[in-house]
Amino acid sequence: MEYLKSTQGLVAFSVLLVMLYLLWRRPHDPRLRSVTCLVAGWALGHPFGRAAADGRWFLGLDPMICQLIQHTLLQIGVYGLICFFIFSALDDAPARRQALLQLAPLVVCVTIMTWAVLTIPDDLRVAAARVPNSLGGGPTGVLAITVFYALANGYLLYGFATMFVWARRYARGAEPRLRRGLLITSTGFALLVPADAIFVASNISRYFAEPLPRWLLTTGVWFLLPGVVLCCVGVVYPFAAMRTSATRLWLRHLRTYHKLAPLWTLLNQSFPEDALHRVPSRRDAFSLRGVHRRYYRRVIECRDGLVRISPYVAETPDELTLAQRLRSGLETRRAGAVTLRRPIALAVPEDDGLDADVRELEKLAVALR
Image (cartoon, rainbow, N blue to C red; front, side):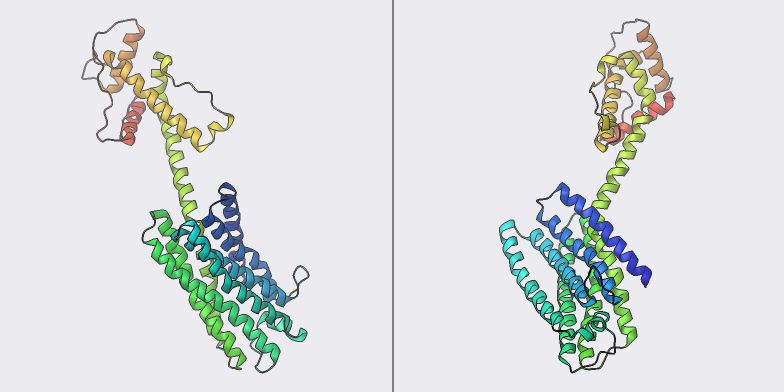
């Protein structure tokens, strides 16, 4: 269990760093701000929750105040997720109005929770933070404890249930990467809903001195931790998938760039004037755009060179391979011979599109090795 809690904190803070980077890139995106609010609430509330569960003071705050901070941050995170769907579904002006309306229950909930925490007697604050089964019913302090936890978990239950429905609804019309991210996130919500339902039932049952069985509470925790991890993974999945796809394309273009080197070198030696000259920046060699730019330049220069040399290749014997005919045509041109033949198509792809064209150039370049 301790391992799962540490993993939850590590994942939450890692995702928070990613979201802060994205927010720095697009600070005016309301949906990105909302998701960052969600992840920040979960990540920043984690150490306070760990301290409260252990009955420890943290940053000069007693365990019950730590519980208040953790649950408040969690609820702010849920509010951020509500805003994400609002700004995804509505235009800016109506979305802002709806976001303000959704803020009212959050403020009321946090206000009542704060009042409940302040009314808990000093001799119950550590026990209340750890929520042991030994707390019975009757005293005013125990009633405040019940109100605090039932309201804290009840708000989360409402938020997660609503977000599960919205996530499934918007996943249907989303593009593939976003749809997969929403489905992963909704799976996390599906685990969080029963977990919070168990916790709310436990909060109320304790007040009546009828605590739920321990195995049922353990089940709630086992639903909670993977649910939080899946929500974090779902939030960051579209960005991670996009970067993975971009990296895969970058590697493919880099390999093709080097594969075409034999063909490009031969043609560039004969037609140096066809090179698409450009002074590269220092970071061009390692940036995504730099590799793509050099890849497209090399493909274009190879095609231009083949067009220029094709009249000489047309005069070579047909029984030779294309690589042999190309070398023969280049040697004929270097010898100063003049041809009156018209250009012909060389390395013609079987399919349409740039990828098919590049595959033919790669075959020719490999043959020239």
